[in-house]
Image 1 (cartoon, rainbow, N blue to C red):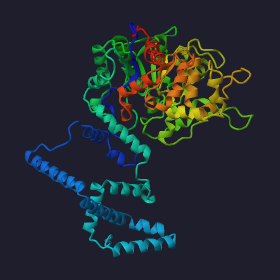
Image 2 (image 1 turned 60 degrees about the vertical axis):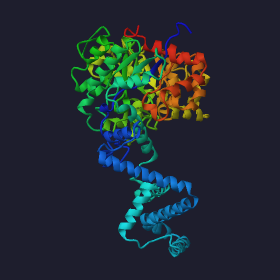
Image 3 (image 1 turned 180 degrees about the horizontal axis):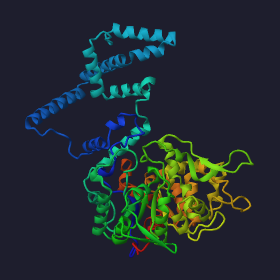
Amino acid sequence: MENQPCIINCHTHVFVHKIIPPQIGKSFMPWPLYTLFTTGLILRLAKLWYSEKPWSPTNKNIKYLYRRIQIIIYSYRSFVKRTALVNLLVNLFNWIAIINAIYFVFRNAIQKILSFNQDLLEIAITLKNWLIQYHLLFPDLAMVWKVLLIAFVFLFLKTGRKILIGILKNTVKLASLWPDQKTIDFYKRYINIGRFANYKKSSIIYSKLQRQYPSDAGFVLLPMDMHYMGAGKVSDEGDFRLQMEELAGIKKNHPDKAYPFLFIDPRRIKSQSDFLSYTLGNGRVTLKECMVKEYMEDKKFNGFKIYPALGYYPFDEDLLILWKYAADHQLPIMTHAIRGTIFYRGTKMKEWGYHPVFTQTTGRIEDPPEPLLLPELKNVNYINNFTHPLNYLCLVEERMLRKLVAKCRKEIQDFFGYTNAETPLLHNLSHLKLCFGHYGGDDEWTRYLDKDRYDYSQQIIHSPSRGIEFLKDSRGDYTEAKLEDIWRFVDWYSIISSLMVQYDHLYADISYILHQQYIYPLLKESINSPYLKTKVLFGSDFYVVRNHKSEKEMLSQLEAGLSPAQFDQIARINPLTFLQSPNFP
């Protein structure tokens, strides 16, 4: 179609491994394992695993020996496969080896388990004696032969290795040392990511992304700042400015296709004096010479990226003035809104035990509300308090922002025009432009579909123009009483969708969750809604999603799964309004 807008992917990453801290496995694995399985090791494994050339030695003598061994092993295996009798004998030998390895490793554990049932113990003893009688079990082997046999089974017999690991995972005493499925998935994901993160320059990764799309496609490039996540020190080569400069270089070389965002962390605002500097007057923010001004006004970055799971709220006191600048200039903000694997790895701070704005009842009618308790203690759980989409009500809803500003320093109170708890602010953030990255997560979409008896999860259906009434009771009067229940019990799809239909400049993208094709029915329903259709954005989460599917596979599946009009709406039309600003005219 002539004059058709180009596809814009609103959620991609091109950062290199240098910006990732070394102890990325912290909180997933016990000490000292996370100090051993560092980011560098993971990425070296990835480089080896995904190398287009298999490893081979470089010394010519060793290489010759290596090649001869390869040929001998191949000849042996092919001979075994072709000769039925030999194949049978080899399999018999392998199973004898496996049985003996299991016996040597788990004999004591099996005896203790069976000692609670005399009948089972007797059966086991009978089976053991039968195996010994027919020379299938050799309990009296010397220790060196036992060790060699166990090593042989673990290294060379795939079936034996799986059985040993399976028993090990389910042995009570050792189960706590074995990584759970979530941890295994975590490392699989990062080893897979390594196929891109191992490149030395972001521009190379960008080229790998660009080649999977039509030549005129555009990309929002989202950086990361992991300096403050408590997973070890980021190397000097991963300096924040170096990452921003790489993005600036990509934008300079691809001005009509690359749309980089500047990463914002309130802790960098505190610790780096030249990061954000401004003057305030008449409700307007004017940037002075600082890093934010350099990249947003001089180098024309297209928006801001935040990642609250790294250990802060999106309404942190040190972010509010910058958000007013963003809102006044219609610069978009991309926020992380999914339960992910990148999050703060340190210990939960005391002040994180209660929400700064939301409250709960004490259980007695006569008592005033108290701060909302956030009891989670594990990192993987409590970091979702920062990510929770209801937090953004504290920014875009004037009454909630007023409550927040009341607790801020005087400079912020004066800037927003705070008088008292009953008087509206002179300036607010209701015009803030923001996108919920990942639309809450595919698990929250499933949760929404599963909740067929919970009233809040039906309101986006029965009242599509409003969704959940966050701050009104059944009579239409203002109340904050419902926020506690919404926080604890309502799925994130319902919360995000309700926020989008109530506030003009809120969006959500389908990055990462796009690889799950079971989201398509609800995605179509969302795009068909007259109140949501202009708010849903196409994004893939390249290259973080690569452990599931390639970009070109997800793009082709999306185009096949949606009608042309639906695809154009989220991939061509909506991104233009989301990105529109003085930096994206």
